[in-house]
Length: 293
Image (cartoon, rainbow, N blue to C red; front, side, top):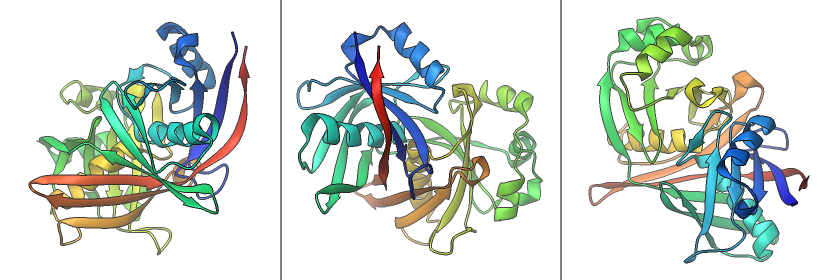
C-alpha cells in the first residue's frame, strides 16, 4: 500500500533552515510499530502521521521521534496543518484542528497572495512544576553557575510537553553549553521534564528578542533546531515572571544556529483571567514529496 509523504521545513527563514519534518498522510496504512520504524528511518526530530479523514472536525495526528511516540510537539502541528491545507483541503481556510493524544490543537492560517504565509497554534494554558537549583543545572549544561541569571528561577514548565527552563545572562554562555549526558540522565530521573530549554536576551539578529537552545537526548534529539512546544512553555514562563516587565509578550525567538539550521519562532502570550493565552507561530516551506511503497 502506498502512502504519500511530504518533507517540510518549519519555523524556516528560507528553505533548508528551520526544523525539518516528514508528514505522512493516511494513518490507517500503518501499525504503531511501523510508524515508529519509519520515524527512525527518516531520522528527523519528529515524524507525523495524519489521518486524511476528519473526525468530529479534527484530523487525528500521531507524532513520533526516532525513539518514541509523544503526545504533543509544536513544529509537527504546524507542519502537519500546512500539508493538510495544501494536499487535503486545497483551499483557503482560517483554522485547522489537529487531534493529538494530549488533546485538540487549533492552528490559525494567515495567507498572502493565496498562499499560506504564517501558521499560529494555540497552546494549552501552561502549568509550572518544581524549581531546580542552579548549581546542578550548570553542571548538566557544562557552564558556570555565574552564567545563570538568578533573578529568575530554573523551573519546569509545560503546555503539553514539559521542559526545564533555564535563564542565562549572555549569548556567550548559551553558545558554551555542552550537555554532560551522564548528569543529564541522572537529572531527568528526578524531573517530569525530559528536555531542557536554555535562553538569553542577547541575539545574533538585532530584530529578534531571545536566543534559545533546546536539548532532548531522551527523545533521540541531542539538540533541536526549533521547538514549538518548548517555546510555548517559555512564553508562559516569560509572562509569569514578567521577564519583559509586563504580563504580555509579542516576540521573536532565534534558535538552531549551533546545529546549522537557523530558525525563527514567533511568540504571543498574555495573562487573562488567571490564564496565560499562548500562540506559537512561524513559516512552513515545502522541500520535497513522494510515496512510500
